[in-house]
Image 1 (tube, rainbow, N blue to C red):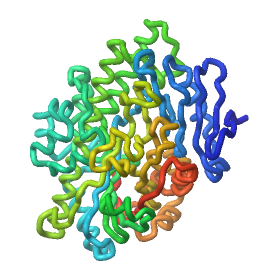
Image 2: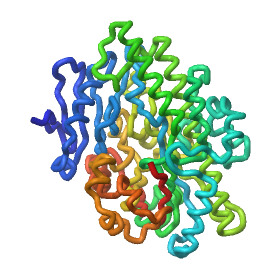
Image 3: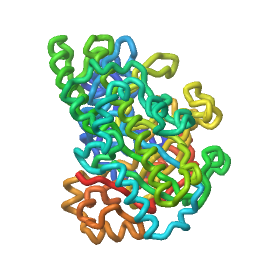
Length: 474
């Protein structure tokens, strides 16, 4: 029997029971609720609600699905003094995130040969797939500690970007508190991956602005109908993955010594104030900054690819940064008059107009939030409204899976994938290699977006449709 009780419009509550210290809530609209089958994810939210210092409520996003420890699409806020920090509640790919570039190019002006030329030029510079190293691996190793501590501003200093890029990156592209000494040698060995996108759901997508919902907001973002865009989705790669594994093991052992009851290994946690907790936050910040550098370097490489294929300077085609948002991160924030450590796993910070933590450029609008769909469906640019405080200023980070990768490969036929993609160009022509990323493996992005817009937490600004997609295998 489902533990979900209808609480209010598009909001379902899991009442405190057993060892839970607070309630949990899940946001679903009617369409998502009808097909909702995520009992394991609900249990994971309930487990998180049993941790010391947790704030009411633990939140499940519309794209929620089972993860390691906290579900993907989970938000857990902790009292900054009395609470705990959990590596599994941040996630494996620390600061997996999305950034969007605009252009002044009409998407329809690029024919298929020119599109193919563009994506090939990008891939020449940006390796794709699991385990792939940067083409500048030796250079990355030389300055490795500076990437971890200084983040994207260090790349700008080196000429790998534009100074104004930093105005459009969450945290200005660098999270304070990073300490390379908190990172294991094994993680460092996996760090030669700057300017790579990896595998899974990571991608570089050339898209088209299909529809503008809010012309005023879109104008502030430089978005117009028909315009070509570039969306980049990747994170800290093997480096962040290793940090999560390292600290999950460390936290599990430390919690046992402290006689701290942990619901599951995936939610291994220690007090924020403990030496182990502080070391994790310092290592996590290194991975956050690594990921900001990764997306920044890719941006530079994408700009170079446009210049090579289309001629002239990259600025001739605009290629300005609209915004860069982080997923899979824990940050200290002030919410409801309290200082909290907010774990967002597969969730995106969403600050409404006037919030002081918005970058100055978007103070009056609220920073844009980027919500990718699948490689065959729409993505969205949205902004938050004041009601989003109820979710600790958080919204979903994507569409969310309905089929595991294994199930997708078993159940989806190549022709189904080919048909669902239509005219969307893929990097590789072997469709079978992309079955686990087929649109059919994901929830309906329209229903996911509707869940928060219907109750006034967010509003749509623009809808983007894919034109050409670069995805790594594995």
